[in-house]
Image: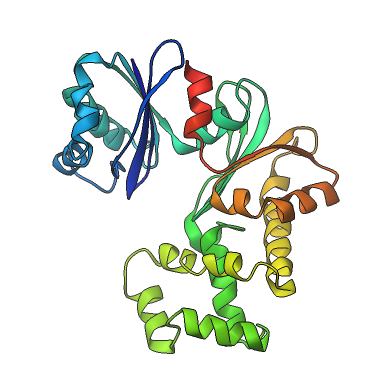
Length: 279
């Protein structure tokens, strides 16, 4: 049997399939970012799912995609933990960016983007990630991500750019007094996650012209600033993965079409598509 995992810092989604592509089970365990957790914590986070570990003797191969695995030391740490828990399995560890590429483009060439809490992109040749403009975090990048939209909502709220009715609703739904915002942005860890926590406001008030205009502005910025850095972005399909891209795909498609670009797949989560890729 085969295990495929989509690992983040807070949780890991697993699927177990047999050689006939039959789904045997779906599991959730703790986060497996090896740059965040030590070996003991990584092991405990997996072991929390007793049902999955019950199948460990029968697992022959594991394909894990996650964040924080590009660092050699972190990679080896996670490899060691998995090998100890699944001692009969061959372990393969890849980046979450490659998961998005394989899940959307498969074995074909394309430009692949992730739009979730953060955003990122790459040129994929059908086998490997050949080029990426690099990732420098939410301060320099992350256009059209959850934290980028959250920042715009906060800015528009404080700069009085948000329509009056929406501003009142925003104030009711979130604690946005000056002290709270400053504390979260400059004194607490993971300010990018805090900013992304405002993104659901766009779903609740999706019918508002202000929200639609904000979405268009974000997707325009992502395409004109980030994707245009790839010389062949006009000739190749543009694939998107992540909650923001999937939930607001109407506006995303509108912007892609407006630029006369080739739209590929838009998916929320790569793990189901990765079954088809690996089995």
